[in-house]
Amino acid sequence: MDSNDRTKQLLYDQFIRFLHVYENHKDTEIEHFLSIAQRESIDKIPQHLTAVHMIDCIGKHEPINNTGIADAMNLSKASITKIGNKLLEEGFVKRTKMNDNKKESYFRLSPQGKKIFELHERLHVLEAERFYRALDKYSEPELKIIQQFLQDSSMHMESR
Image (cartoon, rainbow, N blue to C red; front, side, top):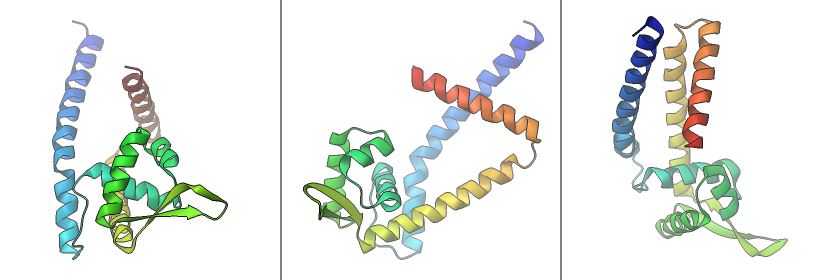
């Protein structure tokens, strides 16, 4: 095996390790979110991360309808309807109609939903800052290579 092949093998091994670490992190992410919410005295919290992300999507784009949420989150309208009904039932969102379109429903956040949205936003800012600090050790040309690699990897995974 030549040097280039060895490097590719090392990259592949590291990529698999990254996927496993990510998978473990993803499994504990909602637990982490719940513990922070409890520390901040937020009593009611969605139990699934997709519901938290739907609250985030609504908070960023309200008022927004099912189709808009489905497009933004890359989920089916049926999934959005199911999650939306659960969030409505739990009091995280309100359903409204627009004056010019009485037929279509739009989502807005309730006060409880706004608390979840604001907490989620703060946590994303902290994660972004942590990520940027991890990248500080790389030069601009290295960052461009990392960016290209992540872009290519994403496109490869999406095409599968």
